[in-house]
Length: 205
Length: 212
Image (cartoon, rainbow over all chains, first blue to last red; front, side):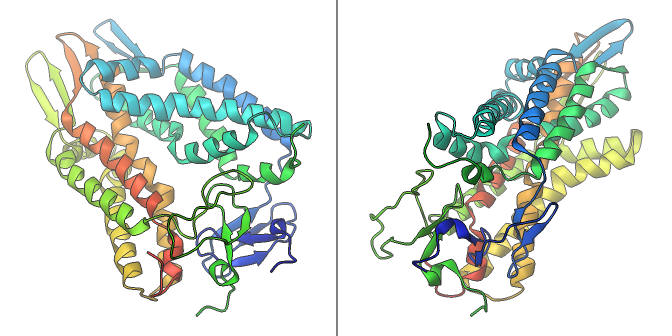
């Protein structure tokens, strides 16, 4: 194999089958012939479009954290909760493990992911590798499975239905921001960020 | 065995982190010989390191924690005249009876079906791979991708309890408190996720002469 450059090859992550890489047309998905796992996908989003989506996600994320998610009413008393209110409440109620888990998967990891992506995409758009490119790409890879905002949205819906049995429930702006965030996450789910390795030149400026 | 060229046969390694294809210069007999990916700097491995041991250890730990997660109550609803402790399953039943059966099905799936599916599937994958079985390989590969994809949705109930704890705080009239079951359940989900990440799906295709 000595003569083939490594970029021309592709190895299926799920079964180790080696392929010669082929340029994909818009909307095409390459699948492994052996185990049917997805090899590569052409998502048709430019770097500028991705950057715009990350910036949108940041704005929505701030909204989702600023505003209460739901407010409950009982005999004229009201009680609302934000994400941080939830994290703090769990800490105070002797469930620190859950509190830390929620803070990480719903706040710190998504935030880190967006900031890193914004930074990397900004420089990629200018045709360069951002300072700290390689370690940041590694961090992004390990963070990937640990962001859970979309699960939290479904959890909020279940909590609303449960609370509705006993209380008056008012949906607050936070829940709409979370719904928008879930849509953006779904768009990003189809993008393999490792393509940034190939889209930017080897030597940083 | 298969008609497709495999990286191990061609002397190639794909970086686990950045997917770069590298020439395999690892010495199989000498574990101290290490190689870093020239592009991202991560350590290169032919297979995820000690995949079986790690996956088994994490899976068994997750299963042990799953028992108290189900037996112990996860949430207390306290009001003036009564205290009501809910386990995962009684929470599902309550949703089914009083509220909406469709959400009850979703919570049941996330909290009971998905973890059980992960225990059974990952256990089956580990046993069949260690025996070098060539049984239903494409289906087992698909099963692995399924459990990777759905795993983290089990956190659903943990977030429901957290939100209700934050919301229902009407002093004596009505309050919700988390109980130890929810901590065990949260840890179960994290451990099952780590277990399925430790498992290397390439082992499904490796046959008897795997390198673990």
